[in-house]
Amino acid sequence: MEPKPRLFKRAASPGARICSPPPGLTSAGPCCCPDGSPPAAAWHCGLIGPFKAPPPPPPPPPSSAAGNAVYTVLVGDASLRRRSRRRSCEDGEAKSPPGQGRLQVVQKSPTHCNGKVLPGEAEPANGRPRHLSDPLVLKRPEEEAAALRLLDQTPLHHSAYIPVPRQRKLSGKAGIDEVMAAAVLTSLSTSPVVLNNPPSGFGAETSCDPWKEAPAMSSSCSSSSNNSGDWSWDPPSDLSTPSTPSPPLSSTDIATSFLASLQSDIEETEATHFLFGDPIPRKRKNSTKVMFKCLWKNCGKVLSSSSGMQKHIRTIHLGRKADLDQSDGEEDFYYTELDVNVDSLTDGLSSLTPVSPTSSVPPAFPMLEEAPQTPAIPLKPEVSLVSPPSPSAATTILSQSAPTSLCHIQTDHAYQATGPTGLLADLKPPPQGMEISISWQQPAVFPPPLPPVLFKSPSGCLTPIRPADVGERRPQPSPMPIAKGHPVVPPSMPKPTTGTRKPRGEAKKCRKVYGMENRSMWCTACRWKKACQRFVD
DNA sequence: AGTGCCGGGAT
DNA sequence: ATCCCGGCACT
Image 1 (tube, protein in one colour):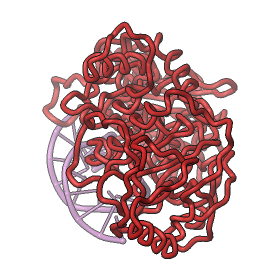
Image 2 (cartoon, rainbow, N blue to C red):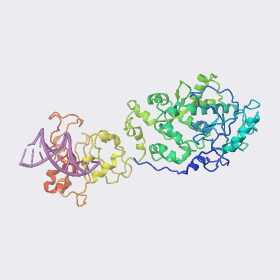
Image 3 (cartoon, rainbow, N blue to C red):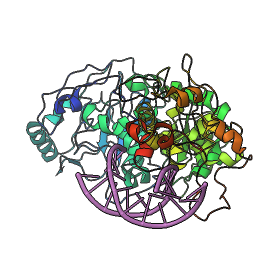
Image 4 (tube, chains in turn orange, red, yellow):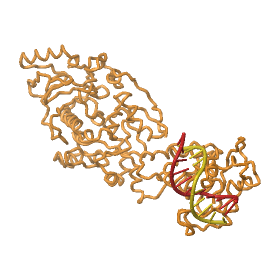
């Protein structure tokens, strides 16, 4: 399957990749790009300074990793809660909330940036969380001096104060937001999903972060793009479409937990996206389902709805009242999203579901699940469709092998294009305006095997040179199979006559039809002394 | 002997 | 993957 080009392009330069502001955020300011890119926006680094605010008592992190700094973030845009992944200031990819928000990251544990341990951790004078609007208060002169030195050394610290539109929400939830932010950053930095499975779907999802730019994206996101077929989307909306669920979750686990509520949760999912203020509600394919996995340590519960997950966290982990409908959002940081491919799950449960043309792909090949959504085969109207070469190839009939087979058919390379019988049941109805002819090796229901509808003679003529044989054969079934009267038996049934070698077919073969003098007219298989594919028994 | 084609080699 | 052929089974 050919990778589809992305529908968007992003700036490719490293500086632009790192520093270009997210849509809607244009505030300029210095950033701490280690690559020396020009000052872009203060939102870039997110690390405002080596200052420490006394966050509310941090909730126990869902998982812990020793030595990791714990951050508190004042999130201006809630979408960060859902989209952010672990970031560090070292990698220059600290993400900022999109939109008008401001971001403040204050470190509670060893202050560091770009690998340096920064002195001057200042406790707030008044013991309350210091907001951006608060002037920096350094208690001791040496602290102030150290801070000033740092300000001089790194442009990073010039962004200690970022003017932000006033309309930003500063409700009573601000303190709670800090707790949430701390939690999410902690989870982002210690999440087993991120730590253990960087190349997995979540790794791709991370790379697909809308604020991350093209280079990393092109590779990691292309896979999901390939899966997505032809459905169009704009970059921010396709934040994550990993086709592979998080490894810790078996597909059956996911399936059992969400299949039951699949339908009802779709709306809720969308509503959740809206509530969380995603820049653009993610357009998900029908085959992708969002699951929510609890990141609480030793929990890992997977629920199909965010509200359910919030309730779960609220009641189980936070010890709050379950009936307390009001959510402060803190729960948001204790779970993460899992994008689960519905098809893979349904395929995994294929024994429970009726076989449909789109589910003919075995679950072992989830990457092919999307194929039915795309024009399966670039059939020309006159091209005849035949079975793939082998039963196993039937799984890829809609992918790579099909065009090749068709090509071979047209060039009379029927040998490569042949396949098992009984495939007809798996074939989709041809697209409109397309004509598909099942040429041969059909199920016993269609006993007469037809020679290929089209084949080229060496002169390029589409009609055979010996119409007496082939011409008559084409419009109507070959008399041979009818005479044989194959019983309705699966062709895979071993024939009793011989051991491994199948009995010689009674049908005329290319040799007989065309003769040795017209060997060039033979099908490729006959020329290669293989089983004739033009006149199949 | 003629034919069909399996198995395997060469490229 | 494509092409070719030795050799066997069958007619």
